[in-house]
Image (cartoon, rainbow, N blue to C red):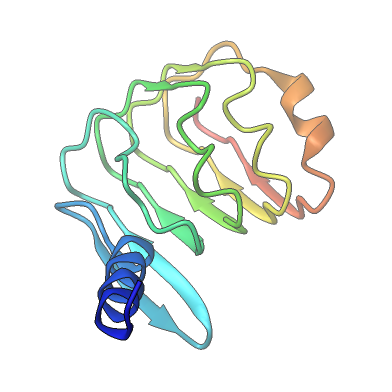
Amino acid sequence: MGPFGALCLAWALLGVVRACPEPCACVDKYAHQFADCAYKELREVPEGLPANVTTLSLSANKITVLRRGAFVNVTQVTSLWLAHSEVRTVESGALAVLSQLKNLDLSHNLISNFPWSDLRNLSALQLLKMNHN
């Protein structure tokens, strides 16, 4: 591959890393990647989030189910905000991949059954908000 091909490949890879799915807004702040997907009427966790996202806001959406595998491509998330998102079900294994998670807000949802065993993998967890479920 010549220099031009290598340059095109590098730009393509950077584009994939920096991509942000519609209708979210992704920004770098203080060496942390923030993905703001709040208040977007989302029904699922969006695909295509940057792999280096550390803060993910999905609050005030219509995500009724957190599916297993929904966060498999964003394992660097340290803060996950899902308050007021109409969550009813958290599938077993959905949160277990977030081993660096420090803050999890699932407050003001409709959760009646929660996979508590997923928390075993969340050894960094410092804040868990689940009030008003």
